[in-house]
Amino acid sequence: MRRLLYLGLGFASVALGTAGIFLPLLPTVPFMLLAAFCFARSSPRLEARILDHPRFGPHVRAWRERGAISPAGKRAALFAFAFSAVIGFVLLPFPWLLIPVAAGLIGGSWIATRPES
Image (tube, helix red, strand yellow):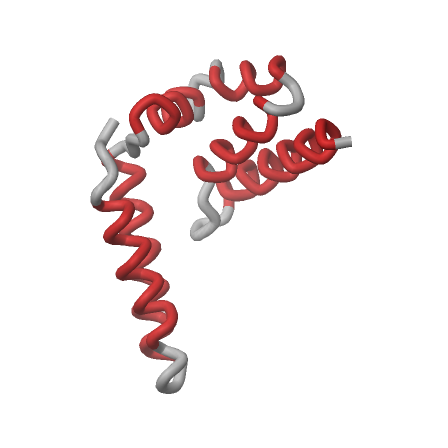
C-alpha cells in the first residue's frame, strides 16, 4: 500500500515537473527531486531513469550528494521569489503583503546559502 502511494506521488511529481518546463513560475527540478525521493521508495527502475536523465539527473545527484544547487537554478529561484514578493507588495493590502515578502526573504536566504554545483 505504501509503495503504491509513493509510486503515485512520484508520477504526480513528474507530471508537475513536466508542466514546469512550459509554465514560467512552476519549478521543474524540485518536483523531479520529489519524484526521485518517491521512486526510491517504490521503484528503483524509475528512480534510475530520473538519476540518469541528461537534463535532470545532474541536478538531482548534486542535491543528494552535497545539497547543492546550480548557479542558474539559484538565480531562477531568487528571481521567482523576488518577483512574487514584488507582485504581492503591489497587489495585496497591508498586512497581507507581508506574507510573500517574508516568504521571499526566508526562502531566498535559504536558497542563497546552499552550496553551488
